[in-house]
Image (cartoon, rainbow, N blue to C red; front, side, top):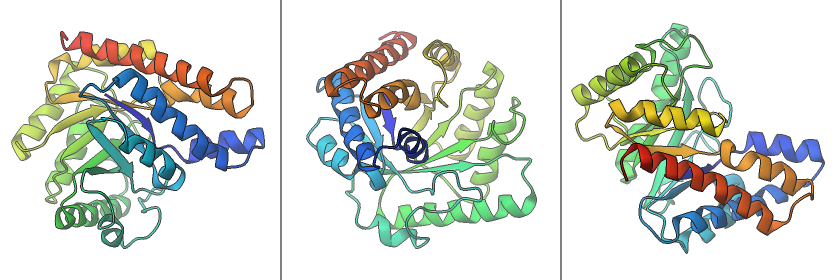
Length: 274
């Protein structure tokens, strides 16, 4: 159960709209760590996604907490075709990371994309996969297909199979909510066929309302491979805007985010009978 605050582009837009310095983004990310830690309360099963660009201080804060999992992104936000954020020599970046930080890479990928685009993105993901294996870090690949074409029962499973066919076997997949149980069953079948060592799937949020995410959690009952969620804007976007505008203080922002994160964790645990 992860609070994702690796967003860069979206928070820059808020800061620029409100005419506040980008340093405020870094300060806000430290508050998200406090919110996640308040909900986790030292218990296992909680984690965060934090970025290196604005989240360096937040990483230091998170290191003092007992989070079970920390992930950090490598993609250039919004890039399609996929690009890495700081350098295309991704291996030189990864060797400096703590061993327990999971690599996260978002790719806007649809099976119906033009062949040249697919090939370019596939090669980028394969380069990342090989680098992750060489330096001994876990890899999470996030696939968002629904923004790039129709999301059918076989869309995401086909995308995963295409990547598996290239020998790309991430430790984790991060996937958008699916419209039917059939879609989840197809995804499960592809993973089971290609990589029985895969650690599982985490669900992403896409800024959906909490009630929609709760329904999405329920829909994953048919998919034991779905192990949790990593949700961000649903939890923090309102607090970020109000805090940067000076309408709420630190504690009010932390309390608001903690309440939203707790509601999602409670809903997730209910779907698993916990």
